[in-house]
Image (tube, rainbow, N blue to C red; front, top):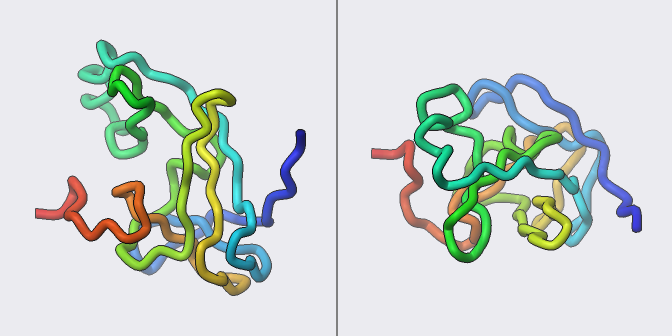
Length: 128
C-alpha cells in the first residue's frame, strides 16, 4: 500500500537551527510523511547517548526495550506545545507516521509535540 504524502522540505528555522516545512498547503488529517525506523536495543542506548544522535531518537514499543532512529525528515521536526502535526508509531510496519492536525500553509514550519501527545504540556528533556 502506498500513502500519498505531502511535499515537504528541510530549511533554516527561526525556532531552532533547521526544521521541516510544508511545500504546499496541507489540510488537517493529511499524511505528511511515513518514515521507516532503525531500531536500537535498550542495551545500546548508553552508546547512542554519547553521540550527536542523542537528540534524534524516539522511545519505541510498549515495553521500553527499544528506541528508534527515524529516517526521512522524521527526526528533524522541531518541538512546539501548540503543534500543527502529530506522529504515531506503526510497530508492525516499523514506521513513524506524521499527520497534519491543524492546517499548514505552504512555507510554514511543521511542528510536533515531543511528548507524543498534541495536548501534553509537560516539560521536555531540553527545558530546565
